[in-house]
Amino acid sequence: LVVVPAAGYLGAKHGNKRLMCGFCGFTCALALLDVVMFVLQANAALRLHFLVSRCQPGLEQHASCPPASKWTTLCSDGDARECFDRLEQQLAAIDLDMFVRMALCFPLIALRCMGSIWMWRLHLALDAGVGAPAADAQFERENGRPALAEHA
Image (cartoon, rainbow, N blue to C red; front, side):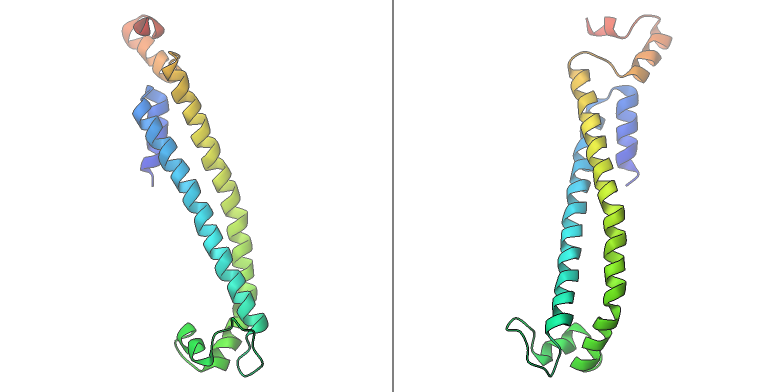
């Protein structure tokens, strides 16, 4: 994953539109993947809450609760009651884990989206004939003339 930021850095530094486009695409895809993973994990946590709150083995159960035989597949060892007790004990840790993931995931998604947008704006500026500042300065040092003169 070091390749993605490197592509963005090198693309911006040298005015390489292909590297910038690759950075934008991969960064956007990673942000989307982060959202999907968070939704799937939140769904799993909510389903565990449902199981613990409404599906105690041996008691009157909600219509969508699993039968006792499914509890043994949910927890590979022990009977249904042991599995339920273990899940009930781990629920607080699961909630804390989801809170930490949310606290870390949302800023990361925001940074990835902002980086992608800013790089896309730089890409559009290059299309309009405005060079990347670092690339222009390097061009001027190496060739003794302004970089925009090359585009004219």
